[in-house]
Structure formats: structure tokens, C-alpha cells
Length: 340
Ligand code: SF4
Image (cartoon, rainbow, N blue to C red; front, side):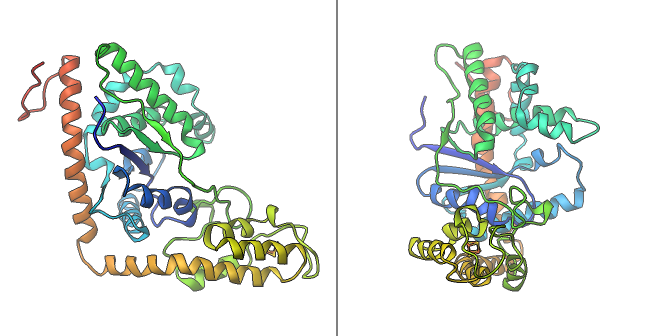
């Protein structure tokens, strides 16, 4: 049965303070989506423990990720924001899905192959990561998932798991919807060193809440068109990461001006970066102000996440009640068993 209001689920790893790549690649779209869909946004800490980590740091990073999301515009009065490990039904449903997912399908996942190659010992959790991802989405019976390009394969696996479970346990009235990719105008942002995707761990990122002086200290030496060596050399904006950042933070008119001045050597790269910095500040300064306000209210983040987890759990428990009843499993203590 389709839900009356379309529902989305999306998760983000607790990598601490988010960076502009996270914002432009996902969060900006979430902020817009939350007004059109019933939205469940989750800090996925169970996913973060599939690789080695330090427990005290994880708690801090989870908290900081929540501060960044709220500062970026996630509104807890319209969206449900919570931490994955506060809703135990995620792992409960993941176990059930593990029992119907062929091993070969998991071993073929590109992200598993990439990550496994980089580690001496591979935990089973890394292999089963996409099954937990399917449980994250299907627990809320989400219709749509805003995904980046690198997540499309995982979403296909979630769809396959939904199909397989429905065919096995509810062939006449499918229970889980097959979640669709929600196409949102997101951008894949390169790191300031030009060496690959922006990432906090490689130090090539700009934090959403970073002080302006620190941002400029990173922006000033950032890689540009490598063929533009002298101020008098004309450049090719399309090959320059700074130009693509202008598109994210400045108006179309400014972007056209940047391209024209670059091609004609009408200005130097430092002037170009100053204009970018001003555009970035128009977006980032209000976020810093919101973060300062959030931090000045003790317990506010915990309260938001607690309320979010309670809302998420109400939906999750109902899903598990249905799933367990159909599969012949025991009902949770205190919950009324399902009577068909
Ligand atoms: Fe890049 Fe701007 Fe320099 Fe052109 S002028 S190479 S767009 S930084």
C-alpha cells in the first residue's frame, strides 16, 4: 500500500563537521526536499564502525555532524533528524535481509571491492554494509532516496532486496516499496588540491563552519588551471575547480564574468578567488551564526536527536511488527501481535 505523503530517507556518515562537498552534494538538496516530502534524515553511525575507529571520537563526530546539519538548514519541525544506533530496528531488519541476500551480490559491490583492497583484514560488516543500507531505507518504507552517483548501485540492491522479500513473504500484496532515486540538482565537488573528491581526511576540504580566515588560508593556494602560470596567461575556466565552485556559490552573471575574465587574462587568480570567497561567505556566514546559536543552547542537539529517534522508532517498530508477523517471528515484548 502506497503512503499518502511521499517519504524520503537519506543518511550521512558522522564525519564531524561537514564540508562544502557534503553540502553541495547532498545537504543542500535535503534542505529543499524536507518541505516536499516526509523526510527521515539519519546520521549513520552503524555504517561508520565498519572500518577501524576511536569510540570517543565517534560520539563527538556524530554530535558535530548533527550541529552542521541543523546549521545548514535541516529543520526539525518539518524533518525527522536522528542517529541510526538510537533506533535498534535498523540492525534487526538488516539481519532479516541478510538471510535473503545472496553472498555473490554483495561481493560484486564496487564500494566493497574498493574498501576491501585497502584493508589487511576485512570485517563481515563491510561486506554487509549495503544490506544495512537497504534496511535503513525500507524500515521507513521510503518511496525515494536522494543519492549520489556512487550510491546508485547500492540503491539497486535495496530495490532488489525489497522485491525479493515481497516475493517470498507477501507475493499477493507487496509490503515494501521499491525506492526510487530522487534526482536532485547536486554537485560533485573536487578537493582544493585538485587531486580528487573533497574529503575531510585528505585535508582538501572547506568546513561548513570553518572561520573565514581559515577558509581564505586554504582558498588562496588552491589549485587552478595548471596552464595559467603568469597573470598575463589566458586560462580555461572549465578545467579549473575554482570556476566550478563559483557556479555553486555565485550568480550566473558572476559566473559568466569569471569565465570571460579568465579566458582574456582580465584578472589574476587571487582576484578570482576573492570573488569566490565573498560568494561563499554569503552562504556560510549565516550557517556559522546558526551553529553558534545551537551551541549556546545546552542540550538542544540531544533534544532534537531524541525527539527524532522517538518519531523514527514509532515508524520502525510498526514496520518490524508487520515484518515479524508475516515471517513467523516473535512480536516485541509489550507490542500487540499482528492478527491477519
Ligand atoms: Fe581558475 Fe579563476 Fe584562475 Fe581562471 S582566473 S584559472 S577560473 S582561478
